[in-house]
Length: 127
Image 1 (tube, rainbow, N blue to C red):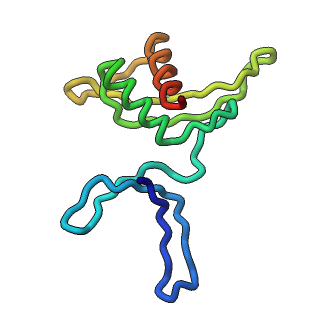
Image 2 (tube, rainbow, N blue to C red):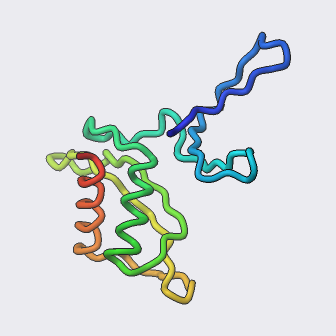
């Protein structure tokens, strides 16, 4: 189950919504161990599909490990609309930091086949 973090002051008069959504992954004694799943309102929405940050991270991680046989260190993704006239179809630009099996950085552009594998993983996650 996922939970939004809301902090309340001692009197309960003020509440603060941080926008973080967490998921309980384990317990240490009775204390829950949580991981940040995603931020509220963080969606990719270039074509109306509303892909969550969690879905993008999951698709990238799975594509990197299973399809590309690489490790995913970090990533960022932006919606890109600035294209020449007549080709104004929105797209995403994804920048990834990848590592090989030894943990060394991989400095190259993804192949068309690798991009298609990521696209398929994103599609699978949105079904």
